[in-house]
Length: 416
Ligand SMILES: Nc1ncnc2c1ncn2[C@@H]1O[C@H](COP(=O)(O)OP(=O)(O)OP(=O)(O)O)[C@@H](O)[C@H]1O
Image 1: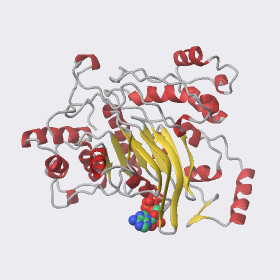
Image 2 (image 1 turned 180 degrees about the vertical axis):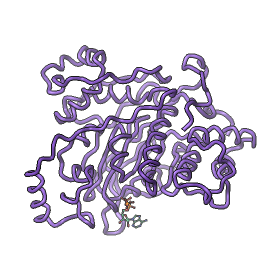
Image 3 (image 1 turned 180 degrees about the horizontal axis):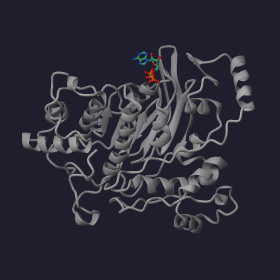
Image 4 (image 1 turned 60 degrees about the horizontal axis):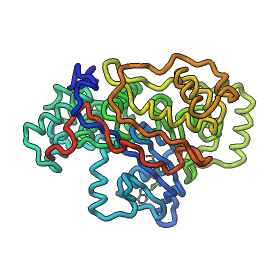
């Protein structure tokens, strides 16, 4: 990963004319998908908050890839809606779908590179196919994205000549060339060793800081789930069993969540997804007898030095703090450890004292890193009206939504 973006030395205030951009929110509402008599999942409701990183977990075959395909309109769920910029992807015209798809970048499992093309041409492909850029403009964008993913200098390599990790990064550069506002990662860790996976995870966090797009990662990798996302969801037995801020799943004592996050055999997930009920009860009883210790949360990855802080961190903090009282005590405690005392005071002035909550009793760790803030739009905060968690509610439009400042790449409205 290059240490600095192409706008090296630039500060947010230096470039007042640069466009302010932010990833778009994706609202999934009551989505159900079957193939013939086989129900894949039913009544899935969640919101991918704008600019945040979310992870979708689930045992093999629970329909995570089907979910990704449904978001981009490649598969049509029988019920429910996927709302992006007010358009229902499940029920829109072909021309609307074409426009919506332009918002997406997808990193496929294998990178999906053309074997006979060098990396430069692979990454340039969407620009040559879908824009009218001149070759010099194409070159500028391609090199910029290759720099973002740490591949400068490898332009002439063929996919067959490079490692799996480099192929992933090349696939990622290609997913970035049209400046997507939503990026879907289908098992980015597949086929990578733990070290390459760790580098890729850092790259994902760094990219999010630079482009502030909305990320959804499908993965089986526990390390990725524990360290990368702001929000985590899990599919199991045809349902979204849980979705919310990372602290909710990472402190959950829900057997299926615990089993998955600890990679254990004991629990509801069997060899072919579901287990015999009697065996499961025996295993869970055995586990209850064992000293499992206190579940601990590994801190979320921070952005690499030299890059702007992630705008999403503060937006998420404001969002989660609004509803913190509705979360399980363990999740509240973990969230409070990440909050700067000044932010607690601000929240208390808005929502009253937190001193009688479990969360308020927790000694807080070091505050969030206060790097030079990345340029971000002012986001209108909303106090929830109802009792349901924020991530299940259809959100109101935010001031500045749909806008994000680009550190890299063309400005919106530039020649296509
Ligand atoms: N086009 C299709 N037609 C019929 N069945 C399909 C189709 N696509 C997926 N399925 C089925 O949907 C189920 C879920 O598949 P999917 O690939 O989404 O699971 P997954 O959770 O991504 O699995 P893995 O983690 O192993 O990649 C599987 O039983 C699969 O066979």
